[in-house]
Length: 228
Image 1: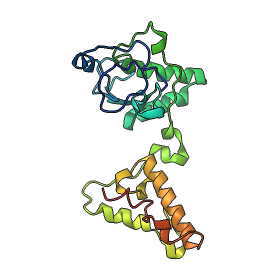
Image 2: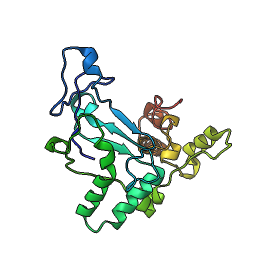
Image 3: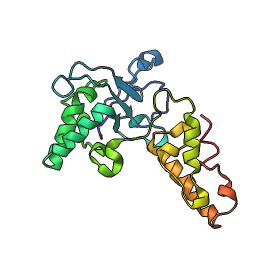
Image 4: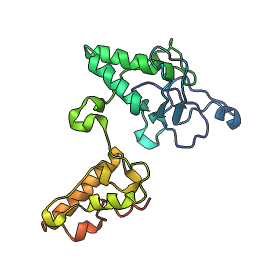
């Protein structure tokens, strides 16, 4: 969701390189730190959006303006899951136009971003310029938003992951995806990328097109990404 965010001068836990308009300034670091808006916000069981969130689903977002270096930009990235994700996908599915989809998204998220420090509906800088949401729960080819997880009571799930990760190379069969990722990235898009990268390297090596075994990498993609 592309929403201008008001950051405040202080000593944040990450380097803040983007300072939107109307930021708070103070020569006293202790005073300024009281106004700093952190990079992550969590709205726990919100009770102030009965029309759009009657079940009080938790909401959380990352402030991408708090990223370091030249990657910072005025965007709020909301992480949705479970019932919230299904609801967002339903809003998008029933929207009659892109404009209607935008309006539905902003209506849902307004109770949260409007509570960020120094937000004012009268300021153009605080008005969202665009909203973008995934709708995997509507996508059959994405398993309607499903993903793998360990079953309750499982004691040696790590061995299952390692078996899937290995695949059956002697039969020309390899598996990739978040379910075969390094343990630190299971269930994530990053993990899916790493797994695909690792399998591609193994296939290239198996057909004699690569330099050395796995190109010097571990079979799961990188020797430095596993072990957690």
